[in-house]
Image (cartoon, rainbow, N blue to C red; front, side, top):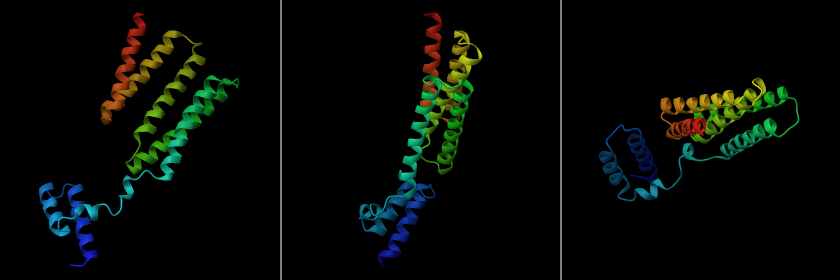
Length: 180
């Protein structure tokens, strides 16, 4: 059998194995049969395009980090009018949500943008709370608690351990801060 046909058959067997269409032992046997025991050479030819971190992903990650930095910068360290600060922060948050939508649609690498967006939501809600309620400690504490609950619920619903743990730790810190 020529090399091109073997590559096609091997890629089909790998597809079956990855999508659980056949048991792994059957797929391993077929791979060993068609590659004559040299499956490492055929598998190492080219990485899967879906699993690569591309240049566009790097740009979007950079946007997320700069967006979070600018949100903190415009919210807490500028003398601009408050409504303008909040408008800029919400615009950056909208961009972050669009980046999450892109990564979620691709099904890859969306955990970091999701975490950064939740931190961005926390900063924006704290800024709005400070302006709307004149920095009331009770309101600020409730805003932090609501954000931690949001992290906990989203983490639990979608099985994101890091969000669940962050929400629980934030709520524990909030409870300790009440009694301190």
